[in-house]
Amino acid sequence: MTDLAANLARLRARIASACQHVGRDPSSVRLVAVTKGQPAALAQAAVDAGILDLGENRIQEALAKIPLVSGARWHLIGHLQRNKVKHLAPFVLIHSVDSVRLAQALTEQAQALGRSIAVLVQVNVSGESSKFGVSWEEAPDLLGWVRRLEGLALQGLMTIAPLGDAEAARPYFHRLAQLARSEGLEELSMGMSGDFAVAIEEGATVIRVGTALFGARPATPEPEQ
Image 1: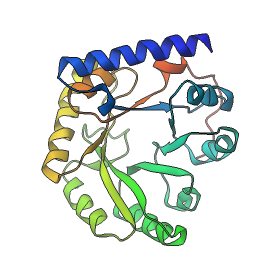
Image 2: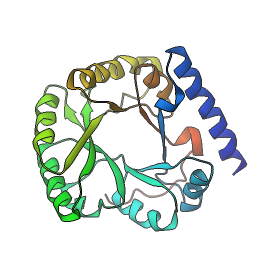
Image 3: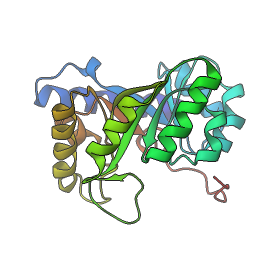
């Protein structure tokens, strides 16, 4: 746990430095600790260290882990299949709405839960076929649909930049921030361990960090989504 404390201190210092560079308050950036592939004990240690927002990529892994961790706010940050929306009750924010059909399924689930579901629309800004997300060209139409659907609380946008040099990710973050401003949306979930500082400089309000906080994930088989 000493490593976690040291990693968290370094991470917070880098967040503060990125914010200072563009005149932002560090409190305007929410850190979501990505616990994918990590044991529940380490997720609990993160909460105990003051990181209340935890992110999971897979529903099945999350459902096994959530009962073992107390005091966390859970985010679903990975691709969501429509047949898994019935399991969303524990999550405070869904980062990965990328189609009208998924949005409609979420509306039905919101009615079943008797409350609204907070969502972000995931945009595939880079256009990479390996990434999920609505295309750049179709994003405005999907945002219009989500706004009209009862039971969904649209908070903002999410994207994943191409892997590689952090500075090369800047144009993608900048473009998403421009779209958010044009749509009047406040939340921008963008930036991971390798590029979160650039994302903050371009306006990220949520960063999703795993490796920089916990180190490499244990080698385990990929579970079914």
